[in-house]
Length: 182
Image (cartoon, rainbow, N blue to C red; front, side):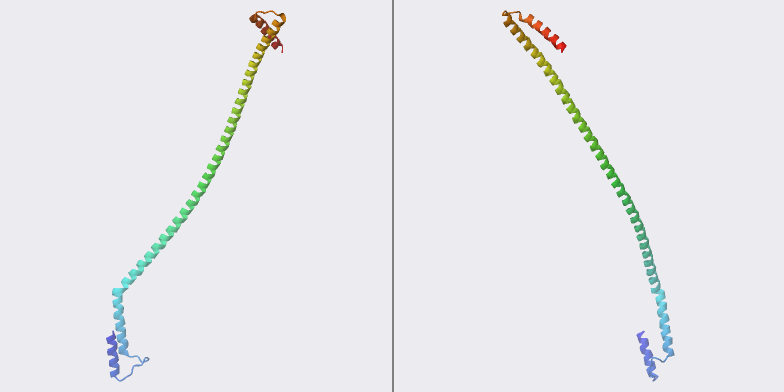
């Protein structure tokens, strides 16, 4: 291309005309159009399809990326909603477990209190039985002592020795009749 310029300049200088930017040279215009057409033809045959294919491929990739991004965004929104729902469910379940634990603790507390009262009542009843038994033993012992004292007193009064078993039986019967009256 450069040689074409040089030869055109040489032809125009031989003609004796000085080139001016405003003058139109028909040969130069013709050769410029031929070179432009030839360049356009070569580019159209070799470079243009490659460029168009590259642009189309890039456009398709961009559209695919946009579609993938939209799909990912929708999936992320769906997962976020599911996460929120699961979180709310977990909170509700945790609250329910707390309520159940409180209820179980209150029932256990009531059962322990009832058991403690029952044990205390049982100990009180056992203590009352023991007291009644000891009272009965004490009364029996007191009666024996009274019989022995009565016999000792009666024998000192009479100053004679009496049969202790027979006397003891008589005094015991007398004290039982006194106990039955009271």
